[in-house]
Image (cartoon, rainbow, N blue to C red; front, side):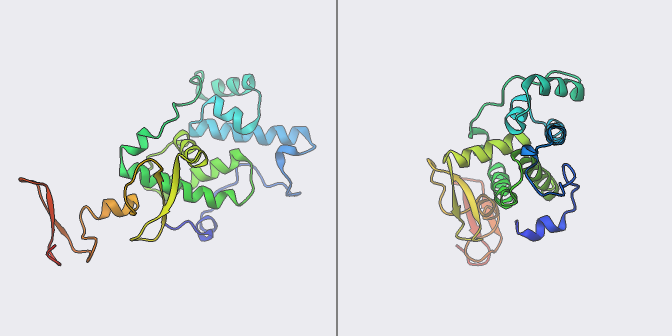
Length: 214
């Protein structure tokens, strides 16, 4: 999956808020009403994307009481307390989930370089991910978990020997030097010649390549 600058250039998302003509950090804007409007707008977008009150407060620096009231007005019910449990067990259960985690991480590396607020960066990553992937598996809370796992060095990046793209892998688990996408692909295609594999389920599980006969 390509995450070059052409990806962002090709997707015409409306900005979270109108770009400031002064091009300064809206959070430190001397006009208090303007700064408050930006934070509130980003808080609304975060809540609509599925973020809980705690996460919204961390990203926007808005008072918790204010965000709780905003959440109740938008969603019609109080926000669940705290944040979702922080663990990578859910990701490790599926190659598809790890593949999506790597996609989110690559998008974040690109978007982060734009120098926007934490809230706006997360929203941009979420919007691009949902647009780019046909069947998204990660919600906004899971995306935050991916970024934290990388920041805390629980996961590290490696380069796949087949597709040569960077992917994420737990530091305490040796899964070889293939990315999740290639591991899924090579369940059905030979890693040597790309030919289709015949999978034998009777007796000892094994695979047989129809081209190179390995």
